Length: 300
Image (cartoon, rainbow, N blue to C red):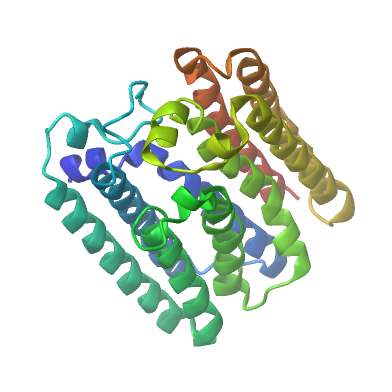
């Protein structure tokens, strides 16, 4: 298990755990109760899907040559050192990735059967998430190589988990929930975006046309800022236009970390080594904002 967690980059599971917990708090605020067995199974399903996506992403990036070209690999970006340095066999990553997806599908199906919701919308959201996770780098779609990776993250780690978990718990989908998912969706998209800056040269050589390659680091840094401001706007909307607790304003504290990361990015967008603190702060901004939004929902 320790080896599995290491290869699947378990510390980054917060990207999916945060929206699950936030959405569950949304449902509790609306319904006054939580089905904890449904929560546990759905969390298992989504974490397993995230693990599988990480493993398969590393496998296909290695197979397509992007990671071997990377000279600026760090603990946040650049692919798995286990593959590039020959510490693990590619077949291990492929096998663990497929197994993780199977566990995700099984837990997801059990969740649907347990909660008794309509099968089609939940199955559609689940299959969409798995398809995005698999084809993020896998041929023939190679979504990240075609400049669609950021949109995939926005959907798979932002909108879909919040809407899906809320539907599991509350049995409905409404515009308020979709809008409430946006701040975290924008912030999680910035995680993948800022991780593309150190990979700029190697991704360009490998033909991985992600947005930083398409825009160049100079223009792409403005996209990062736009997403931070969009998250700010989303938080303000949630606090002002919804019936939720005023304690949700605490989420603005998480955005201060993203603003510090923005300053670092603007100054050092061409210096991969200098961007490591900004990469760390971007992850922390997503985590802290999600925690503060959740706490704001729990306090009446």
